[in-house]
Image 1: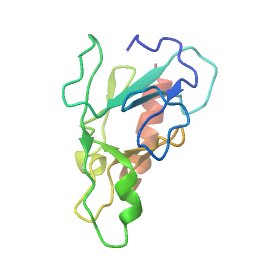
Image 2: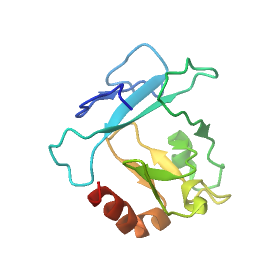
Image 3: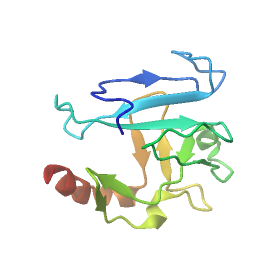
Image 4: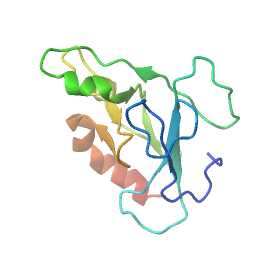
Length: 142
């Protein structure tokens, strides 16, 4: 994705009315995903999220919808989180073998992929972290 070339700490937020440290006038936010080593290479990756029903499509950019997290008593704090429906994870064009069940929230409000608009972290299910060695292997092979 070339739209955030050489991205380093690119961060624009407007996820909900109660939190907007850097408003951009739209219901969108984007940030650059850093390497797991927080190194200073100019390799970058990015994610752009939008609540628009029919966003204008940019050539070379992949899109994914938000996923509604199930409402489970006692876990209401996750209702304000943004979940995205991942089908797979790729690093440098190479697919990482992680079971699909870890990439979506289940009926108990566990798992899935949370994109936290308050930090530069993305939270994933424990099963994805367990397989994190696979991500590292792919990354180091680039």
